[in-house]
Length: 202
Image (cartoon, rainbow, N blue to C red; front, side, top):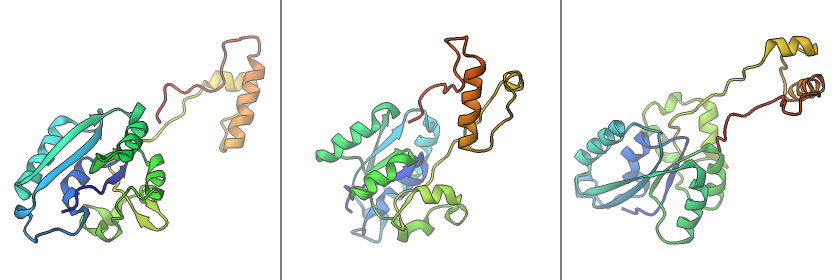
């Protein structure tokens, strides 16, 4: 069993890939109980409750009793730097949770396992959201398994819009136009910002 190929997921992994990690290459035996080795799994801080991770590992241990799984918790802020360093050396993780924006980078570099032929082995793979499947696909090959996805909502001040004579936009160009008009309407306030992002998500 080759344990050096890595599988990525799109704000994904953990449960799905930890459970299937030993399928990354041709097994040395048809009996999972005969497989040996160690899997290093990188999960992001806060992405899965410890009870879920422990439960998946327990199920994995039943099927692969001689394979050790080491779960290491990582931080979003420096995951790209840590992965670059790990791949430049000789100890990259075998399974890693990763935001979808970095999948193409590592797939293009040849760092990820092509799991196209294994898609059907993952639960609910026939009903994955197309946008998530697309995020895992590079040059028509599947490199990751969707784990979860988040959506963002925009909240706006209706009174500010009314005072500035603008309506909610339905396009990026419209958003920019509305933003400029709001900035003009509040030009006397040096601290006013037409758009506010509460934090950094990548």
